[in-house]
Image (cartoon, rainbow, N blue to C red):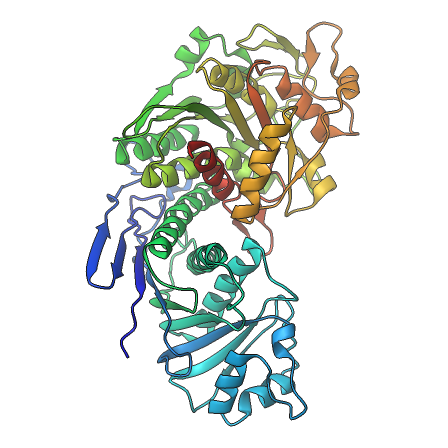
Length: 570
């Protein structure tokens, strides 16, 4: 019997003059018709002989990896390919008195194999816990291998199913498999909406798991994986749309990862501005770009931002992209503001000693990467009814005779004065002027993202971002979006009494308080630059911006921002 399915092909291309994945082409086939989605190729981070980078470093040309997704209802025992991966819960492994699986799919596979799957899983001590997996090469099925991937007790979150996609891709890489299938041992109880969400999460996890940033390596590895079949989660137009959405969001996340991974000698404030401009030019039907230089920022009285930028040989670039829907009215105006420190030395309060992580301070523009990654994804999705402003005050925090000193007083664009008692609390100084600028665009809601404080990492660890806002409804919106995206956020208090530690004897405020409650006082500082009529949220993502184990950026925040914008659009 011929299967009716959905196929999406994701193609991410790089070139020697590219910063990141530059092409996303989705092909969707269902029944007797075919619809093709095209996204134009963009060349990024082009280097000319006139602008040689420090160390003569340029991204290398990496061959385009392609992966196609098909949704089908084929019999799992008849599927032909390299690996049949089964996502199993601990309950799915329950056996009857004759040691046979009670779960229908596992029982069907095991019966076809004469009981070898049950025997092998017992010998491997596989219990279905999250993080467990076993891949067995067993003859008797259409597939060369059968994999069991643990989902824990009762999987219900996006993060778990993304993890399933990542685990399957990891197994495929290890086995040099070119085609795999993924099926849930227990999918019969899922609602139609849950099936769509699960397929989205699996596809997203697989695409992001396949991605490896090899631009700065002298040799690159080619992934063998070419196709993934998702079995048992349905077929049809709604699933097509969800898989395309997974591709759009994943392309934005990969863009964000590559921005953060790029070393500071390659990704300067000027180059970050070029990347933003190229997003706008690629999706010029919905985007416009405005890049302000130092002189224009001076005219806008951005003394706080310019004070941070003053020490660097690389001039600041203030980035403003504006998304407007391709048709129809605008019902709500939003702003996404990202911290854009392409390198942070700490300034005169230089980062020193164990744990200062100065060698990782290229990731101090992780907030801007989240904002621009979301812009890239939204340029493909093109939601109606919403106008979005993407704002980044890009610069470096360096040390020189022209630089800002401890004790200096800077004046922000809203007229408030700040005594700089620590030059390593620079991100909030750049965000101050960026937030004032955002409010002046007539927006109703602002979300800012920043790798702002080590205190937030101490409080919440490496996987959870802290959320601060005086607006309960906005918090509810963003937290609901994060539940869909699978990213972890936790609300922390804006304790107004802590503002006492931020008072200055010579200016309106200092830029840092005491060590206690450092992430809270940082958020309170930002609040001084937001119009009271505007709903505002601050996300401190200093922990989840980076994966220490993989030594790579995560692309954190992008999926949540896209989901939040779409919720407002609807």
